[in-house]
Image (cartoon, rainbow, N blue to C red):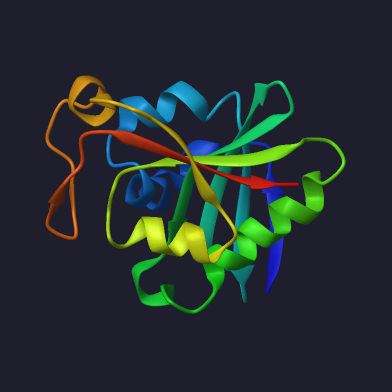
Length: 148
């Protein structure tokens, strides 16, 4: 397995990115200004993530998506650990915004992230349809941070 940066043709990864952020217009807001990484094995992309510089020493994971048949095999954690190593010394914090899902919050906490703050109503105000994950209607954006 290898992780590589994808400098060009980022939209080719849209089917996988849509698993992490299901509205294409939202992906368009960060894809061009972000850095895209892909975890690949034998020519197949297993997972992707997009990170952006948010200023003030904060690097934000805008999208982390793992192919459905590769979940719970350490791909997401591998990407996050890669980012921590790659950007240590360049940024103070690695941050992620997510919904209050019983799937994502425990995952990020297990990867060393802790609650930082929330943006009330983010999902209901910025998405054109209800976002439901694991039976939970997402409303607030919850931010978690991990020191680098």
